[in-house]
Image (cartoon, rainbow, N blue to C red; front, side, top):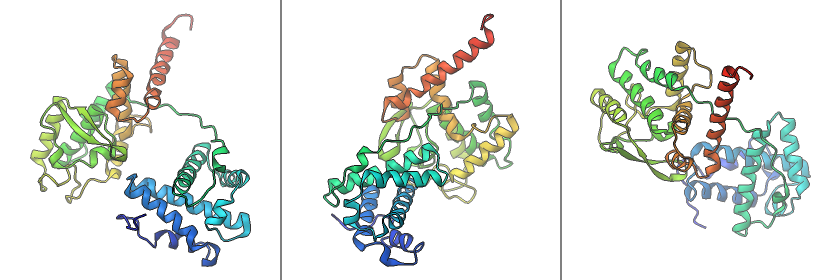
Length: 330
């Protein structure tokens, strides 16, 4: 396979992380590090996973190899990966559970390893399917926590209060209006450039794994973005970032998180009131107003309808609360 290294994934990164905790390069074979690095290149260049996801997968692979070094008492290379048994994988999960990982974190760790071994098997680098017999830990699925329509509107209405600088106030209003009005992920919104500014009643969004979708854009969203663009003092050519910080660089998600923390303190909202909660609110409020699941799935960019169906559980939960509060015999 091609041996080019995508940006952000230096060739020496994984070798450095594998050898530093051990202070002993003999504990891992070069071919063991090589196949894992090939896998990370594949995830970055072909599957185009986000840097955050790549970091998580890399950490999990390294943790697994370091565990195997001690568990099996041998340097880990392709031959060792070939010979792993179901008991080896279960022993790893048991160790991670003892380290304090939750069921959800264990499930993520197992998912990363399954992705690794699926790649190794498909590319004839390793021949081991034992991980397929390992059960995923049961995870209690949490429901999305949307804001009420009144609270969602209050968040947007109060977004400009903290800022004496009018353009930053307009930026925050535009960003929150877009998140709630179009159901975008915070990363999707912050990746927009000026060339993406909507001029009609829809816009194209690039979401997870570079999948694109068309989302409707309400007039109030276009107006909020136009007001911000007109006030923003920084460059606005097509390739310049749309949402920027005080110095003109692309806005960091942490700034949006801090803004929401300030707003929820002022408005008395729960800790679940985050930028992502506006996306949950978008979906839940559409469903409550009669929107169908398939349409909401497309608007959110969910790969699976089962993900979108969690919003029906939120709606049912809210109905039961109202019933218990209002029915005389509840």
